Length: 481
Image (tube, rainbow, N blue to C red; front, side, top):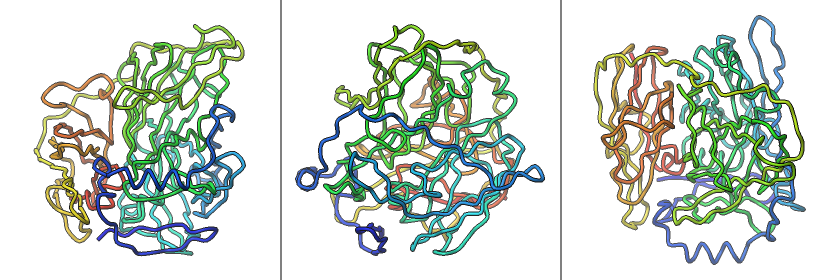
């Protein structure tokens, strides 16, 4: 039975309550009752584009001695003004909402002393990182309240725009929704050598959805389809003043379950240069970008073609084609621009000959039954069970299928960055040509990916990164030995 928590008033209360009914099945929820309740307790209407988009601060290490960056971070509750004039209680890493960005370097370790100042367990997972099991922050490797755990990240992988978030099983969905997540950027000499936009023109942009009550508090319900407020870097519908030059935006979809299709107003193209595991082999010019829960995508927007005073909107496009403006770019000044986008961004090594093949089937109950469950290969997650035994050093092809007819999923593996080699029998598009750790698997789709397990031995999980689905049991364990 899935349990969940609810934050009440100014205090944090823990309630073990059984999740019920179709509220756990996002695409099947009957919206009538939820819509009525949401309207009755809705906050004041939000006037868009009245607030500047905050720049997420960069975390500062407490020590850099011995070639190691050390951080002391506490998980604490905090009060933030997300909606104008209203204070919202959130869960934070060190009081920041979203969490501060950690900037790391390849082959320079990061050590984090993580203290849990909450009344419930937490687990810190560095999503997309290659780390040993103890530091992976798996769903059962919990930090008890008022306790501390030390995580070591060797950063031996190439450059990548990663992110960190809570992973305590059955609690991860609400913990992340209430704020326990942030960005983690690994840099290296390969990326630095390219003439891409840098420094003030390299901007982290986190997108997520939320629902608020009349008092401005985040409303959490498992499988909620009424989270209609989109937050960018923690605030709704901001504007961002830009110079008439190129910018790099590191987009991260930190929603629990929302998928974004993004486009720019005025038929303006964007250039995708990166995905989960760093830069793509080549830039990809596109009118839109599809990014699922947990995925990241680096894009470049060239504002030099617009006159000063122009306003360009980032829009979220719904499945019916309607678009919502979620972020406004205001071109306010000129600036020199030495940056450019090379035709080749990186060279990925050829894939080795596969040593094994596996078939994975993702499925959840979608027939409206009470207490629906979610499955990986027809099994609900059990941390005492090993689902896949993998030889250390193996390079395997996994064929992942979404057996549902209506429910979307995506697939995330801990420890490894993989390559998408086939989608529905065809070669993947240019957006999936790089290294990935999370990939969309829509209803009825089949995706083939190849992963090489040659960094760390031990037990790691793989799961749907729609966090409500993993909390419901769509997760399994692989043992590498």
